Length: 281
Image (cartoon, rainbow, N blue to C red; front, side, top):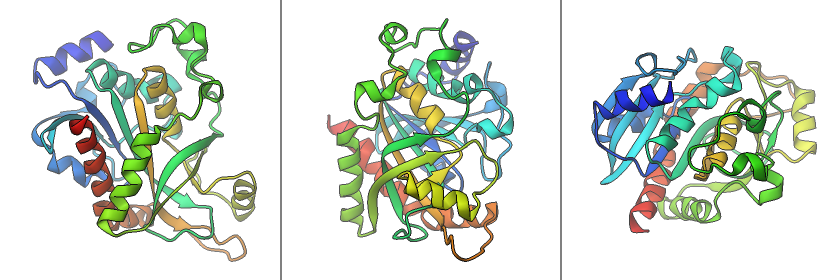
């Protein structure tokens, strides 16, 4: 199916993307600013599942961003939608097969660190994976990754044995972009759960105690697959709400979408800076 997907995409564009981008909840507006684009609905791509999450367009977009060739997912696939790990990370493997060497993955996440503010940007420096059966080396044991065919024998899926999964240079560029644009950003740890429920107050307390700054229901499966494909990775979270463990509050998906739309210019500033860094290098 991957070969068929590549053949379909190559029949519509000859662009070889340098950077892959995953645009999450409420953060898809950047897709409209990609020039000379080819937008292909997920359902038209062989092997690709379709997204059902609100605010996710479900398109693979290939074109130019600031004169840099990119491929972007306008929306993503979540494990809580019922997809297997293999299905959820298939787009990452496809974008790597198209030639991407860097991955920028964004999400809207709940703030666990009480110092965070709604709309603030967290540059992910590490993650805590609480998604069950989220181990690429198990499901993909018979399918060597395209960019790193020795990964199965070296145990690349065991991220802890290979240093931090999130690229230091890309993180540095992201933080400097925030300074240059005059908005708040900080580095932190992202905690991934299966979902699709939001956390209880007790769960928030537990997450904070084990070191999380933000929590969400995506990103980690994509990041693990990207690591196996030998991509350099940047993860960025937009804080959609902040936990108040001692006060009962309600969060819904519309609130997440609205916060994402309000913070979209911040995310775009970071994405453009990282893409320009790729151009400079």
